[in-house]
Amino acid sequence: MLRFVRNLFALAACLTLMLSAAILMQRLAPPTPFALLFTMPDGTPCSRPCLFGARVGETSYQEALDLLSRHPLTRHLLRRDRVSTTGTLFEGVELIVEVQGDAWGKLVQVSLHIEPTYTQRLRLQTDSLEALPRAALASGSMGETIAALGAPDYVRLDGGRELRLYYQLDGLTFYFARRNERLNPSDALTSLYMYAVPFPESPSLLPWSGFTSSERYYRRFTSRLR
Image (cartoon, rainbow, N blue to C red; front, top):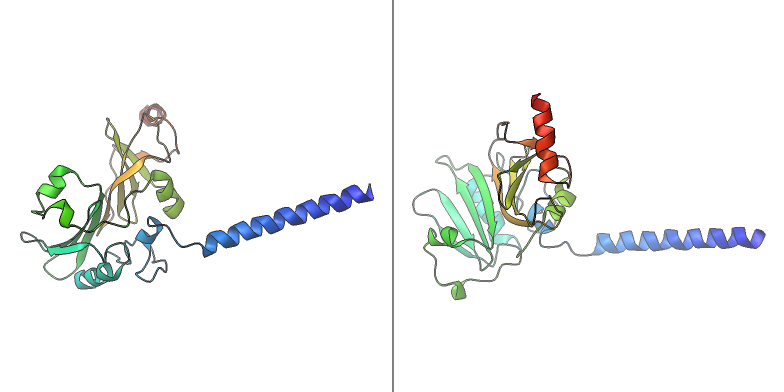
């Protein structure tokens, strides 16, 4: 019996050491490109809401451009000024980041598009894709988003193969391409917007209910209307 207890304690100690080592390795591991979205250029986390270290409402437009010019995800991208509006684009093969300011030099919006569509590229009057640098961030997922920021406030299901996650007070909106009628952690991120003000609530926004089917979201929505 004594030997059994000793072996049990030894096993518990080994498991504790293995768990501690795994946590330490995770903390020491370099952040993924997706996690770098929410860091300063030096890799330290930035206070929410932020993208690339810029904070709408606090960071000026010029300060945001300086942050993106130094940030590891955007510093190698092709930088060009918008002609029609106060804005600057950071463009790569798989990524477009747009920074918008107002007439008073305030930052009003930061957005990014992963694997931009033909329409998005057409309005940029860009050079050939072969002349663009390759972006470090080529993908992202719904699971990574929630792991980084926690559960969103709302979901919007527009039908088809697209959905949106809303972090209302942060002014963050994420767009995802869906594989099927369920919300999956592996659903791919396509676009991300950070706005100057929180968006208003709307009947089309459904409270977050986890990774489940669209039918369950709509069923909960209709039950609230009764």
